[in-house]
Image 1 (tube, helix red, strand yellow):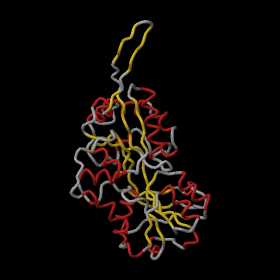
Image 2 (cartoon, rainbow, N blue to C red):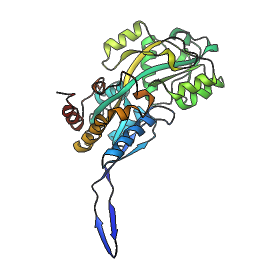
Image 3 (cartoon, rainbow, N blue to C red):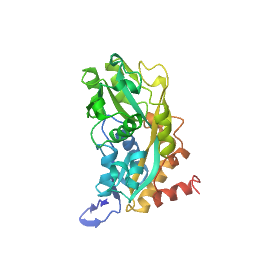
Image 4 (cartoon, rainbow, N blue to C red):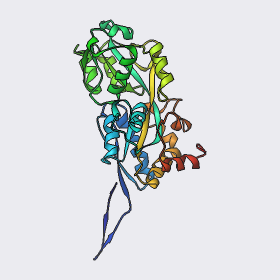
Length: 314
């Protein structure tokens, strides 16, 4: 945790005053995704109403954020709920690298795995993916890790497709240029990324449903079924079923209780203003109560204190 010190100069007298203002860094994601602007919304509220100085850092996403929280290079991060759970438990891609010091603060909004394809690709269902050029985002991203789980569930092997690892921000252009037939993106809706794709190309969103998804939601506490609304994107005329998680604000157990408390409290106290700062926060599914749903890992004591004071946690 870093501190800022201020020097006070008065007429003819130089005095030094040490400020107790804390400076924190919040790891987000790519500039064209939702993590970065939502992180900016958090910092805007925090900077406006507390003495804490909150700065965002654009990162490579969930996997990067949990690992840099472990090394204390950042103080907070926005992370997919499944990645937070696996990191805390030392499961899946985190076997042998458990991050036991990871703590949740709040579950911000629901994210849904989106399979965006060009209509001319002919992909209408998951089984149509054979032989197609598909991007799963950059290596180590939350999207890449979740997509790997989905492929396993549907029995899809790497050799079944032409796999591309293109950053989600670059995928709308890659789709337009026919470098890929489709791409996966775990994101809150609506998102400018898919809006861009729909403006560049004739797109479809492929349903991710059926027995494989049923098994995943039964096996893992962080997965849930969801629907991408038909009204979200040009060319999408019906609701699209898929799999979802929560975007969770996480921190390190070593971060001061009072810092986590102040950040949590200021979002709860200014919740209506917070919700107006980004479209993914405006939906009816995002409430003060829903901030406690889908955390998956132990909550930081500072956050628990704020939720208890707000009569949202016993």
